[in-house]
Image (cartoon, rainbow, N blue to C red):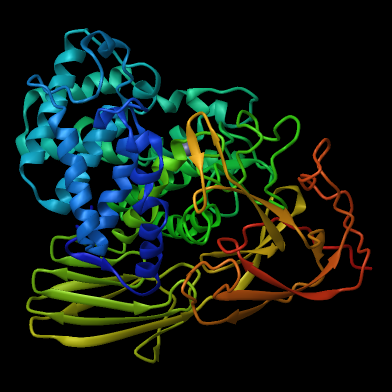
Length: 604
Ligand SMILES: [Zn+2]
């Protein structure tokens, strides 16, 4: 069982720091200035949304501010937390609603607010916040145990989220009411083990139990509750993940859901909230299990699905991303998506619905906080992204361009003995340590002693390959990067006001209109990786840090029935209709319009 470092101990460096700076200069650092549902939130006494949106934003904004050591952002974070805390009543209730509204107030937000406040405590070490969290949950227990309220809606579907803060309190205080609250939540909350059959066949209606964000959150149920409920972790997440992946998996480690589970089609969408929430669930799962599979799954989402669905400047995002996405144009008629509207795939301020606008900010900061973890006198390099760790006398800096290049240089200075473990990805080949070849291995350990001042250079190769996808299609992968055929496009900007929400540059809407042909099949099995320098935008859509060269030929792919801007789910033909040509594949995260699941052409 590993624990996380705080933003005071672990800092991003290199491309990861640059990514977080872009995020701070984009919507994440400015949402409270430009978006009514945060600026005029009920949490601030305003007349806009009074529920999840303000705390959602803080969940990412707070760690982002502290990771960047940005004084202005930190003072804003402190101010907003103080405004929230000022709402707390003597009985502990904190949410902005009247007494009469409490029984109908969906208490999922209590889980979210206590998670946000715990995150703030971990950054600020402000002990008064622990009392605020204590009083919120004690009051919640009083309301639930007296029958004045009960779980329904999101509060019922996401009951385990309460354990993020509750387990923290329980470890500190061990009070009986905490254990009782845990039992009430489990009894009244959704038992997903009884619902897995519903994940095997997409349905065209909206349900809590197949809702994609609930699926992403639910993966960590046992990881966050076992300490208080069962005592040991038994592996239910592995079972849930296998079924979700088998019936709804994408090449980039997320599940389709637009916005409930949507099967294996490469043209169904995945909601951005589920991308960042699946990442956070997996971070918790790795910490609890130490199972390297989770670390690899986390990389796959962070290096592909997350950057793909947010613009280079991080001012705009999609609600739904698709694996084969040849255009992001509003559908003039019915929507392709199961329950999301016809603009859910355009890049904008709040396409389809504003939850992702508020929630996506946690993705990169919490990922950055998962680079290193610790277990007593052992420190592990979990995700080898550029970072610097300062753990009471132990300093480790990791200099690397991973995942774009595969050399990891650890610069270590220590005043005490400790065991240092580096996770080696399963796809690493030709591994060397300080220039010496070593066997393929899941981890490399070093015993460091006080006074050591050393450098460890680990290097490996990642080889490109074709992965099988449903419907006879293939996807190119190399290490944790997925590669897509990029489609050139023109951006059409839309500035307008609707429902009192202003879309104005740079936080306006954009449609991406394709300007190059996209209907290709792979013509041979040879793949060549080309590594370049990382630009100022790590996942740049115009200057990607890695490409893959492959021969392709045009095929008669066709369009999906009833849609002018969506490729057919399965190509109509795989007969080549043009000459073979050499094409460049981009990382999925760089290719805003792309074809990722592609057939081989028929070769005579
Ligand atoms: Zn969302």
